[in-house]
Every structure is written in C-alpha cells, then in structure tokens.
Amino acid sequence: MIAQIKQDIQHLDAIDIIRYVQLKFGRDAVFSTSFGIEDQVITHFIAESGSEASIFTLETGRLFPETYYVWNRTLEKYKLVIKAYYPDTHAVEEMVSRKGPSSFYNSVDDRKECCYIRKIEPLKRAIKGFKVWITGIRAEQSPNREGMDMVEWDEANGIIKVHPLYHWTLADVEDFLKSRGVPYNPLHDKGFPSIGCQPCTRAIHPGEDFRAGRWWWEDKSKKECGLHVTTK
Image (tube, rainbow, N blue to C red):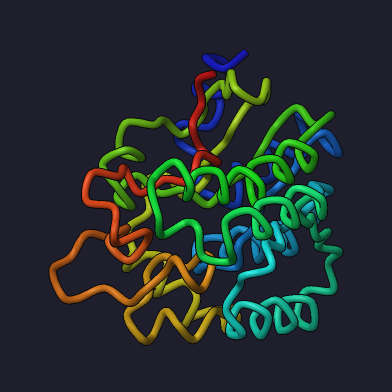
C-alpha cells in the first residue's frame, strides 16, 4: 500500500495530498499539530479542503504562552475541533516528585523519560485506531528528517505516515502563511524555527541548524524527542 500511495501522490500539491488522503481514508486519518508554522499550513489545508481528518495536539504542560495564543487564534479562524491530549497525571507526579521539575537537564536519559511521559505516551493514545497520520515534517528541518520519505510505514506505531510538505522549503512555508493570513506563533519572528516545550527550546543564532534550539545542552543528541522514530 505504501508504494501505491507514493505513486499516487508523487506529483500532487500539498492540498491535493490532503484531498487524496480524505478520499482514500476519510475519518481514518489523523493530523498532529504543535501549532508550528508547518502545522498551521496543514491545518489551513484541512479546513479549506473539507477533510474529515481528526486533529489533535499534545498539551505537555510546559508550553510557551505564545503557543496557547496561536492555539486560540487557530480555533477562532478555522472553527475546527482540536483535541488536546495530556500526559498521565500519575506518571508526571511520580517523575517530578522523584527527580524535580527540571530533571530533563540532568541527562539524555532523563530528558527522554520526560519526553516519553509528556509526549510519546499521549501520542500513542491519540493515534490509536487510525490508519494514516498526517504531519508537517519537511526534509530540510534536520539531517534525520532528510532520510525520511513523503510516505512511510511507522512500525513503532503501526500506522502510515504522510508528510504533505516534505519537499517544501522554509521560504515556501513563510510565503504561504503571509499570503493567506494564516495565524502563526509570534516566536517564529524572534528566531525560534522549531518550538516545543518552553524549558527545552531557545532561539537559534544566524547560521545554526534548524533544530539547534531544541535540547541545546545535548551535544550528541539527534534533536528528536521520539515522536517520529519509525522503527521499534
């Protein structure tokens, strides 16, 4: 099926890929948004195309105030339901009680534990039962993502992943947002190309890698939290 989908969409524009997913999978498709600029483009396409894909976000409890701002603006503009998934309360309580509220700075393992509790476990609940997961991933975001494909089988989660913006450049995304009046996080205008949890995200300096502002204290990290690891 993966090969067939790749063949079917290889010459389609991003919005036509969304329409294709709607025709082939309907309500069995789900889209994850963190309200970053790429995700805002996908949300716009879903609203414009009339897609029945479910939309969700991961409310980690550590988001920027600006993220909540664009979340509200998105709801106001598009009138879509965006389901919020929260981490398991007991797991957060146990981690913070045992290690403190900033344990993710201690080691890569502690950071990955926090990411698992706040993001990966809620994600697994959010995509359970769906056949296709739509994302805003672009190839140029990181070396790790350059090795992905527009359509993939996510073995770890047992789901097909489709990245409609995979071949878009940052300029493509920014031009689209401005030309269509799509709401976006104001932190993007302050040097934040990738926005996650507030304690783990900083602005980047000119010439730095797109993902340099994520977990910047980890010199050897691949700058991924585990959401988009496709193998078990």
